[in-house]
Image (cartoon, rainbow, N blue to C red):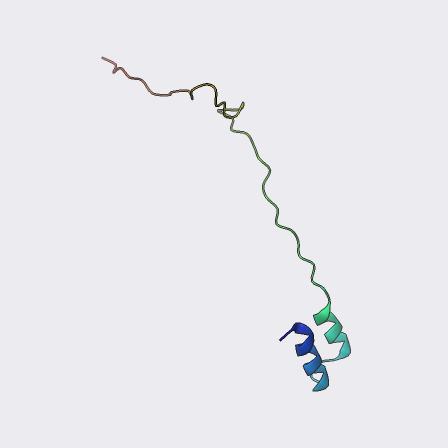
Length: 64
C-alpha cells in the first residue's frame, strides 16, 4: 500500500479535498543531519603522532 493509493481511496470516498491530497502527496523536504565541527584537543593540539610515544603524566617515584 502506497501513500498515493491511500490518498486516492480517501479522494474516492470524498473524505479529503483535492487540495489536501496535493499536500499529502507533496515531496517532503528533510533537513540533512548535521555533525558538530571538529575542535582540536587543547591539551594535545598537534594531534596524534604515531612515531613518538605518548606523554606520560605520572611519576614512578614517591615523594618522601
